[in-house]
Image (cartoon, rainbow, N blue to C red; front, side, top):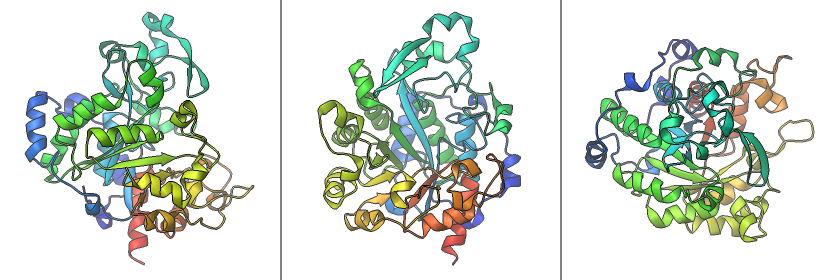
Length: 387
């Protein structure tokens, strides 16, 4: 979608936006009907990366600064606020359905701990080399998961968001596709989605590979083409390569800290780090199968020991030279998430000078940015384009 940044609503409109439930969103209809709409209607109709405004504002897990993340309420609010793209992270259920959670550990994002019938499912898992204790989507059928309710992940930072705890269930990706299709028809233009495969190597080892069921859904809903209004993303290059063989949908490789290694590299013995991948040779390799990169913001402008921004790297120039788009992550309004230069006052949860931070990052030439607060990002993008 191509919302005009100059017409984005302000914080007052944001705080007054209605919380919508799945039923209120009217996500009925068969998959076949949705697929037919996706082939010809605006919901799943044609788009292009070139259609996206620059800077592109990407609603990180929806409008997660204002609603519990990865809920239909968060997605709807991001779209209503004018986000150009709305993000989903995908993990599987025990019976192979793809659901939207940032992690398969649902301890902190649902009320599962309040369900005595699931007390025995609490366990410890090692995921990408890190041990976690809690409840995990791969131990629940979809029907069981749907008995849970979503809640705010970081209530200490965002206590206002707890007002919406319990309002929404965990959405399936198919429900999101139907929602996007419906909203696209209502608005008369495509609703863009940004879809991440989470821990794909881990899940493939469990017999719950993500890429094949994701590709089937994309084909069913007409979002499997180069011109589809959807972007695929993963921190594992191998997952993106697999998806690129299954569908023609645009792809982005996510990049974490320079010393880190994608987990599929760890598993396969590939010695390359992210520092290698952001060099010209690494970017050329990524460009052979993907259309862009999603680097952490620190790869664009590093911070010094005090947390203040230093000089930009050459990553933007180097990536653009190889035809890659850059959508770094993630900018948030609160002081605790901002570079030290832009913090204001002593309350870590108060808003800092986020507009100054946006201006610094936009000045590097990035093509877009992930944000928990789409309305703020849109205002910053309008400022930047109006200079």
